[in-house]
Image 1 (cartoon, rainbow, N blue to C red):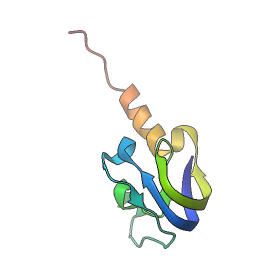
Image 2: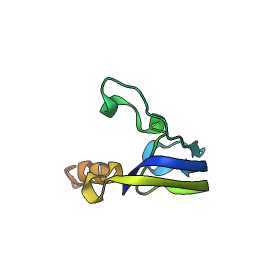
Image 3: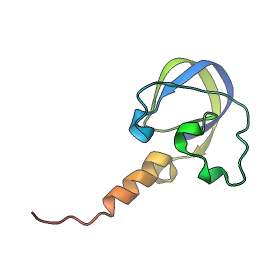
Image 4: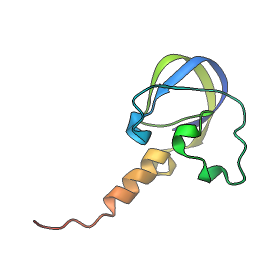
Length: 88
């Protein structure tokens, strides 16, 4: 599930599966201001934790925003599965 964090204590998440970032991302609870929240790059959404990522330190609590195919990794999976396979 993808979570919106409301409580964190020294929380950091390894998000390489989604962003390719090799270093853990420190998590926050404050709102990220943007006209279009969907336009904020995944690596900058520091108040969210994502499915298929690992917590590298700390603790946190959040509310489930998306699950299954609706998560960020689920959307990537859907896109990849639609790619045409060509015989080489």
